[in-house]
Amino acid sequence: MRWRQGFCAHVDCLHRNERSSVAARHSLGEDRMPKTLVFLIIGLFFGTGLGFLFAATGSDPMSDHAMGSTDSAVHDHSAHDHAAMDHDHSRLRDVTGPAPSISLVFHPDGRQSRNLEMQVENFAFDPLAVNGAHIEGQGHAHVYINNIKIGRAYGPWMHLEALPVGTHEVRVTLNSNDHSQLAVDGTPVEAVETLVIE
Image 1 (cartoon, one colour):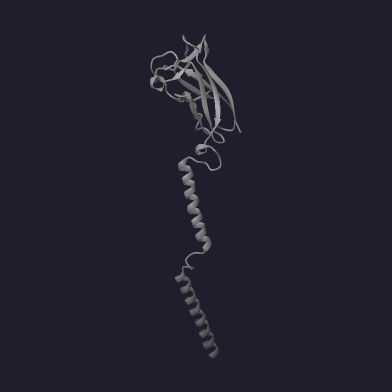
Image 2: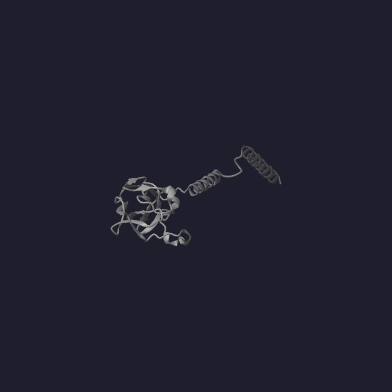
């Protein structure tokens, strides 16, 4: 029986030491969570936060693509309703004055984006007169990539953003205020250049 009392006293002593050790760790904050779990939670918090930040700003850290999409700069213009605008993109208008001309120059702006410079002669960009009556020698430009209209240019510069890797045909037409395409002796006034994105 004595050995039993001695054994129980020893076990009780160990149990008290364990409780005091647990209490000491708890007061120091060591027993709440293992360090690996704390680091996991911190990593998930910051990783998720950075993911939302990149998504909200439209930045893809792995490429030059805005919002990770290659379609942001090129869209099918034919899907827009032009019935209410009362203009015809396919109509040619022969100029009667000095013949306008256009040439294109691409300036790098990132890995897959370019600034398009439209060098014109005998033509003035007039953004305030768009959708108005034809005035000789003025208007705007229509910009196409791979035969898809991406927009109008009301000045000599346009940003081409996040182009997909590959070869692209860039075509720019000079248009009157009424959107008819300018022509000289029935030949459209336009410039076509090949742009390679690597």
